[in-house]
Image (cartoon, rainbow, N blue to C red):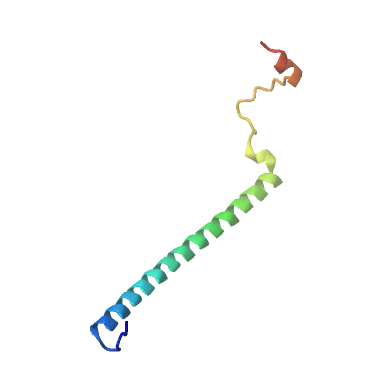
Length: 80
């Protein structure tokens, strides 16, 4: 199939390709924004993790339901 410059078919194809190009640019911009947000989230979580390791006493108990009673594994296994 031969497409001649300046014909309606050629213009239609150019318009379609330009529209697709614009859509792809929009998608790229959206993905770049998402990646940037995720990078910020990772950075924030790394800082939070660093603070949790550096100051464990400020994080509260690991298990809030713990009553302070400690059972040995053997005692737990022997319970009916």
